[in-house]
Image (cartoon, rainbow, N blue to C red):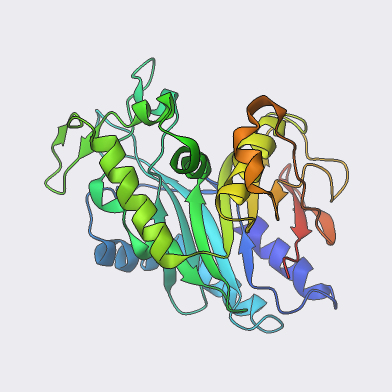
Length: 304
């Protein structure tokens, strides 16, 4: 939170950085000891607002709103499961200065999330697939869609699937906290529910909280097959990500941008021949928190 406060201060110092719609943070930027999985949408919104993370993000949003009215802070949050047997949540949550505005829980796990090889699996919940909580209106009028990490690949699955990727939907939870195996064809049915909500909401921008990469260059697969492909699946809508770089940050603010826009639908079926279709930021800066090893590369994107 101190690092985020420093970033907000640096943004406010830049005279040209005005009318910003949202500040997007990587997946797992914060961690909480709460399990949101079995809760209703209403309970999730109320509970996340009561946390220190919610309080802090609302305060940062308020500070940013002085020059960028209505600016949102969109944070990736991972949580710990309070008992053994299953993993916690992977979330992305949007706050304005008053309250939680959007809340998305990961629905499209990678194989390692659910194959039980060396770590406990991730539970899925049926209601998350059709949940309108992952959509929200930005200050500029755009309808935004939030995705948690590999959720970005679900859009290609809808467009060109079915593929083996939907086989990772292995464990399903219930509000009463028990779990079960999926029914026959249930993954397809639930992805159909996700597609129906997507068609109803018609997002014009896609914001993705990504867990991260070892170093610059490690994001190329994600850029081509995750972000650019998601843009193509959304009719060319801008898809912008934020992720951790464990070893070092990109050297320049416009390197490894983790963003695509205006990607043609033909990209979907180009497979290994897909291009990166980079959307370059228009400005950026690096910031290191004083007395800390933590540093950040902040990029400013313009999609209109």
